[in-house]
Image 1 (cartoon, rainbow, N blue to C red):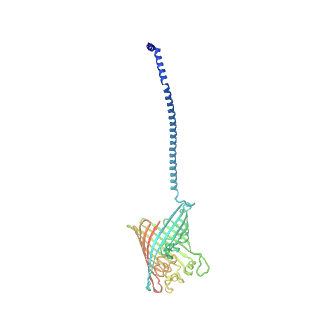
Image 2: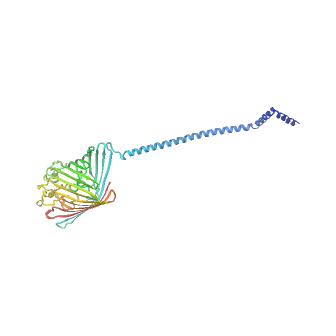
Image 3: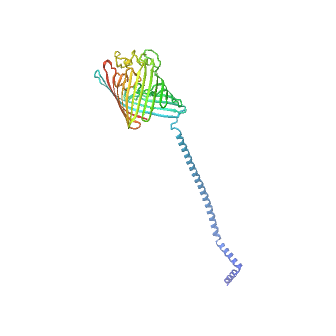
Length: 458
């Protein structure tokens, strides 16, 4: 009964406009009272999750900032490294790899190594004593030239593992002991100043041979010590100079005197070329003072006043390059009062059968042919006993003839053949067939000199 009454009451309230509102409020209150406790727990969990998400977001933001900082640092480092590398590369292209002292702008290093086998046969016409001589020799040269174009200076220094002889840079193997070490000597040491664009230069010191010449008057290894004033343009060239021959040594027959011995010389020449031909012609004169003959000969009567001429002409015939060359030297100071040809050391002649004034001429004629990697050479030379000073003449030409004073009082043939294996390395051989011009006591000797060379230049 009571239940039915309650339902009727609710039904009555629901049918009114206000009744509907009351019903809704009642239901919400009922729901709220039923689930209020669970909803509070959910809200606490949601708040906790929000805080955790915010914390994780802050951590992600910090990691992102660190990553961006690292990326920026790497990029900056790469740019700085690239800039340093570019700067270093630019610096390397502007500066030499070798750092030089102040006033030096460049250094050129060059040299050569030559190994030689040499055999000599000497066959005297009088007697049957056939003599043989064989040896291995080397010549090693290394030098540098320091340049300063701003001030037009050049400084050069070179060394050689060869000989102290002024006309030979060859060192014979084991001539004094088994497997000896050999010696190192000064090859050249000079300073050179160029006077602007005038073509004029001054060289002072021990220098490479400044004269255009062949083998008749000067050995190829000669390094004169003195001063050379040279001039050169496209066509003409000239040089004059003064050179010390001996010093700081006693002159023979003068006790303790130690005066200087000197040579004075000059040369004038022309050097021309066109499409087909090239040519050189040089005339020179060299005078040695009285002290020179006293040092070298023990008498001031042995005068050396040498006039010389040298010329060469070259051109091509097909694939072959031909060059003809010749040299002439005459001693205008030769005097019958004294003769180097009859008095020096291994005297080749008797005074009664020898006249210095009649043996004062030296000459050479030759031809050279070059084809591809091969070069062949032939020359004939006649160097009379008083024509050129024995102490500066070629050291090889007369070594095969018995009693020859270097290359004076000698005549003979020269053959040569060379092959360029590479640009810098070559193998060659030569043969010299020589004989005395004026033999002693009516007897002479034939000499044969064989040489095989391996040469590397750098």
